[in-house]
Image 1: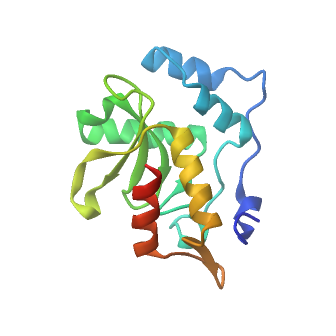
Image 2: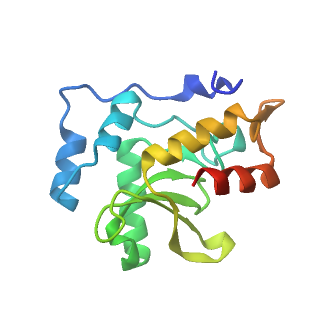
Amino acid sequence: GVGGYPIIHEFNPPFSINDNSVSEYFNYKFGWFPKELDEMYKWHNGQSFPVPVRDLYFIFDNAIFLPFDQAKIYSEAAVDYDSIFQDYFVLFTSGGGEDYLIKMKGNDRGSIWYCSPAKFLGEPVKAFDSLEKLVSSVIECYNSGVYMNEKGHFRIDFPKQMRRMAELN
């Protein structure tokens, strides 16, 4: 498993190399398709997870890797909620309103943003310069013991996470 987690078994199969539905969607909706997203969806098409979501399924802080079709639904619902989200696409969610989004238009295109109404962050806040930076930071957090598995539950050493993320980003 990942960091001692059985969660790796919950990842969905990747999109086929010949399946162009993801790139066609992004090219049509946003006018471009980031290489990092292509690589991510060809690695795995998100996770399978129950509703309601439990921390057991988080792969990093409040984050489940959404399958592409669900990510489209989450993204469209966000735009219906507030037009500020029209330039973003939801990649990871807590299942409770906390989302990690990729910015698809405008300045900082390709960067990762965090939105949490629960933390009074109604508008997205820039969290990572790129999807690659997010992934490398998450891997470092597993390797340094910031993220851990305690009796089947995802746990975070929050003070250590704050320090590591500040150092890495």
